[in-house]
Length: 406
Ligand code: NIG
Ligand code: FE
Image (tube, rainbow, N blue to C red; front, side):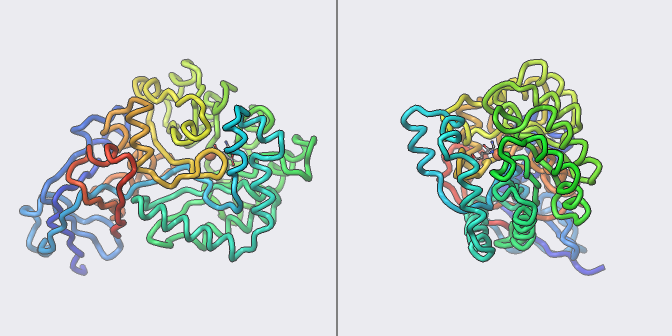
């Protein structure tokens, strides 16, 4: 067998092994499973062969002789973003600053459909250039894996073009890209007033096409007044399953529509936002494998209430944090800042916030068998910061950069 590549001694390594052992539920400080003066041996196939204190590294695997004065984590995962779009929504922001709500701004000609216009007009090269720029920004903040949703094209050919762009962007700056198909983000202008015909078309043709060509891992649906309702979400969930796609749902962001409970019932991999999820829905979710993805930067930027992460965590749910990077409600790629908001606004502990951007976020993408913790047999990918302690990361208020190690 080829000799493994050895990293270390690494000043401090957070493996998240304890978090993984508890499947991401109720993470404590011990569960971070920190090793000081650590070494990692990586096989030729990129998987971890050995991990532990450098002084215990078996000589047969090599020597740890390249000291790294850094704090290493399992590669950070941003599990909910909409990072491929063109145009600006600064005018929406300005209108909200006068007191208009998200829904009122959308009705006044802004909102998702204004980004759809700009995205449809952009050339493929322009979209790819924007995507590359954004991946560089994610990488600088330590994001090693990012999910990207469609939903700013809303015509089959242009949605497929976005999925193809995500595929081309995969690996840029060392960031893995996973695509989610979100044609149910808004009713496109061509189907204005004919929402159910649009959903018919999605279920009869679009979702099947994407599943067959394996262009996305997940389908997603925005359940909200004026967008899609529970019946639409159920139909889309069933079609996604038949097409071999996993399911994610944008649920209960601006009010309780009962979408969190539906997501659990449909076996969704994650339910995202959940700002207004009911106590009953939280209890049901906590008993399931569905991950609750909390997006506090979207609440901060949209000026809406923060999600009840504490209730999800105390009930025993698996809770992830993500940027929700998108032009309308969260134009930030700063995942470290999101961990700060997790602690200050969602009242998460530091270990809960750090587990939420590693193991739980990997689980929200169906990747927890390979990502989210650094353990023997898992893929080797690390996010390295130069700060001394785990507390420094959320305490930095986003004023922190990282490098991705593969
Ligand atoms: O996650 N809620 C729907 N999607 C985005 C917002 C999209 C937009 O306003 O462009 C979100 O917040
Ligand atoms: Fe979103």
